[in-house]
Amino acid sequence: MIGTLYFLALLSCTVAWGHVGLWSEGSARNGTGGGSSDRCTCDAFLPSSTFPIKDLVVIERTAGEISHKLELEMGKLEDYETKLTAYAEKIIKLTVEIEKMEKNPDAYNDANMNNMKVEIKQVEALIKELQLSIKGSTTVFESLHVQITAMVGTLIELEKTYDKNVVLVTRREYMKIQLQLEECEKRHQELFNPNIGSCAHTGIIKVSKPFVSQLNAHLNSGYKYGGWGKDSKPLPDRESMYWYSGYTSGSIVDIRFYTNYKNLILRNPFQHHNLHSSWTGTGNNFIIRDNTLYYQINIPFGLAKLNFTTMNYESRVIPRASTRFSYTNSPNQNFDFSADESGLWVTYATEETIGRMIIAKINEPSFGVEEEWQTSVYKPGVSNAFMVCGVLYAVRTVDIQTEEIFYKFDTKTGQESYISIPFERFQDKYSNLDYNPTDQKLYMYNDGYYVNYHLWFNHTTKATMEPPLPLS
Image (tube, rainbow, N blue to C red; front, top):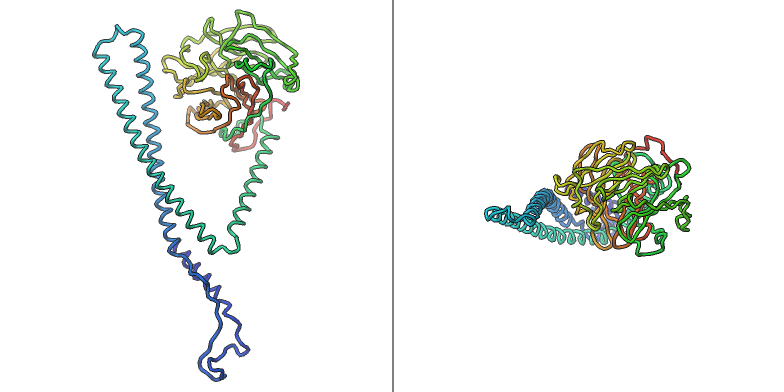
């Protein structure tokens, strides 16, 4: 690289000296004024500064050092992730054991208590070791920041000195505009011509800013619990229908249906169903699919479905499901229903999995569980979750304004991974978050407000199937 730059530097000097002034008519001028002199002179232009080969050598060496250090630190980060997973599992096990001791202290002797203390001290020692490692990495990253800042400063000075015609700046601006145009075309295509019903993508890559419709149909901010959205498998001629259910607590007592978005905003329902007292639900992670409400009940603790076409009610119990594990901000969201391009799902946790989420595929006609997948994500550490194309996406709260899709599990491959897709939250808390495959949007009931988000996917091929439903 340096050799090439040095050659180019010499070449540029040669070009600069190529026009060595204007020769006289005789192609030479003698130094004494006589035409027969043996000494010739010519005019030449010399550049005011020499090519900064030393500066480029320093920049190349610094770039190599930074690349090497980054590779080492990335390797350490992978090691930290593995250790954190192991520590989290140990802490979960210890928590379960301590809860058992608290419930039945007489069943444990001094030896058991000493063993527990030893295990706690071991976890403390591991955490201290990890803290020291992270502190060391922080120092390295600070050093890298200083090096990069110095390198950028050198490059800026070189550009000021040698790019007199502002060629590099113009080229950068052109490339930036070109990328913006490509992104604009891509977003226009995804917004106005989405591949509805297609799973020819590798997953979500971005979530839009929140689109806030309005306060709930009660026009009451006290109705913080509930949900809203569209039927994920609508009946014929009801593709544009919306629904809403809200209450001052986590109970599900009624539901309203609206022919279209306009009537939702005008609070003009065409149907309003009050649930029978024995059918009352809880948890707020309910959905409407095929004109049927799927939701959680507590007596008995299990799943329920209510078909509003036939008014037929059914319930099912999943024996292993636990009442102890719910989402971070919602004490009664033990079951979470979802619907996507491939059907109906429900997630929950058990005592055997120590709070880790289980994904279950539901057979809609029989209302039974077809298949299950166990994940490694701890449900109390999740604020909500949803399914897209057979992939579970788990969400957590980052701060008072931000949520993050941080984990996904693909039921087709059994593979799970940690990701980071942040998105903005309109209000502090929310009780319902669901994906709808008919328009590829997320619907959130956010402290009593109707909120939705557009999703962008990493499309790998064009849609391979026709949209099941027209856009409303």
